[in-house]
Structure formats: C-alpha cells, structure tokens
Length: 113
Image (tube, rainbow, N blue to C red):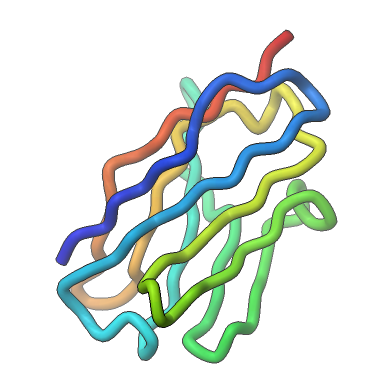
C-alpha cells in the first residue's frame, strides 16, 4: 500500500492550496479516506474524511473553507483548501483508515505573509 501526498507549499493568508493523495495497493473505491494534520507542538488531528460513497465530513475549524473529494478512476483523494489561515499551518497526512491503517508521508502547508 502506498499513499503519496503532494501539493503543499507556502501561501499567504486568504490564499488557496489543493492537496492530492495518490493511492495504490488496495481497492481504492471501497475505502474511506481521510486527511489529518499536525501543527508544531500539537497532536495530529482529523481534518476531513470521505466515505467510499462520497459522503464528506469536516472538523469544525475548516467547515466552509476546505473541500475533500475523490476520483475513483485516478485513485486520488484531494483536499481543496481556501481562505487559508495561519492556524492551518501544519504537515498534512493522507490516511486510509482500517486495520491496519495506512499513512502517507506528509506534505507541509505553511500559511504566512
């Protein structure tokens, strides 16, 4: 199983970024997918999840700003992040929940002027 996240970078407050996670090694369309993030000195937190059927859920702090989506043909999950704030700065991780769960290497998002 491999999860390859990309799309992080430096962005000014109010800007946008789109994260992508390419998955392989399992039946992607049958699995929920999640994005987590970990800010410096803080615990890893669940940001957004999407079920195999496309139902999305978000943590309160990103509702209305972030959108999770999936492309089952390309085996990719995306996280569109708009109206970014300094507090969104973190390493973002793609995750396939389950037993075992799988994690991709993180991609760093820095929101700063």
